Length: 503
Image (cartoon, rainbow, N blue to C red; front, side, top):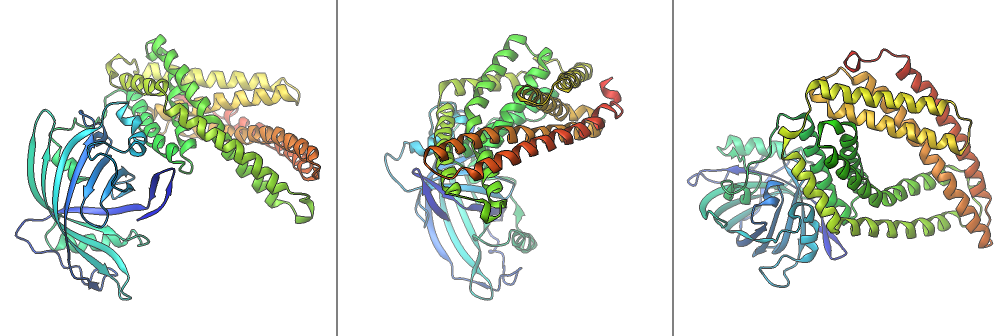
């Protein structure tokens, strides 16, 4: 399953599986034939001994994360399982090493956004008597594995808990079409098994010990903030592992949180809202360079790739890659340093406290309506300011301000959707179009400056700078085109009927 190792942390393939309950006296379900399965290999028997680690209050279990040290079987070692969807998880592995009661630092760091510095202790122990059957297709290729587990478990904490049960599991082999799981599922259920309501053995064992998952609180803003905090934490792990798009998604979550605090400031304690907004701005600033570098690299390489070969003079690709790679490494290191800081941990704690007290948040329909209406007025005012300016750096800055106001208005509409339904859908769509176009405009403006610097560097190294000048000129034209497109899109916002909900 493990494909490679990066910075001492394994990168794993997705684990797609389903679990079922089966009475102790029932035979293993026959899966030949079922879907592409035409043969079942001889059984393999293993005894697996697993120790699970969590905080004393089961913070990992609440997030659907499992961290264990397993002995026995073909994959013994340290395992960190991260939820992706109902049937899909990602498993990261490390070989056995160090003290058996101490979680490897490489894995402990990945879950810091959930543990918030709390000690990871032995939370449960499971012993599994496993019988495995490889399920093969007509060509002898392994499609999936069917396991029959008899589990004995013991959980610690303030309330000791012992249990013993039987469960079966179907796990698809890497490369198998996920739809195959449905055909195997039908065969298993037909044979008398029932879909398990437990996402993992640990969750089943510790259900009485783990605090209930947070449901709808009755507060629109508290639920919105809780959702974005979950996105922030999920992508924290991705940023630490350098997963594609994780920086972007984490930055968006931090912006949504900050935007919400600013837009709905009157619904919170003002000092708390201002302090949290300032800290989220700091976090966004630490993540920003990494994301900006990703966008810049993609744009520049695409623009060079679109040029005719005869217009690419000199070592353009090499110079760009060298410049951007150095910037990327520095930016990623800066982002991870921020995530390792006490300041970031304190921010997460403060956000937790905010969503844990929904009764203190004033978010009745009228408070929410007024806040979104204010965001609409601020957007219109920013457009009015920009419309008075001539082309140049001042106008570029003003259009960037319009973009930020449009984004805040759109985020506000997203936050209040539980009470507005479709009432703001058209307005939100038009505002998003403005934001997207001005996002392109801003990217082009920033790219233009980078191209100027690359041209100067090429000249200093006695390289041909023609291509950078050409791309610079094209970026000027692209910015002008985006500005014209914005003008047309703004007409749909300003001339269209303003939603009644905002009046």
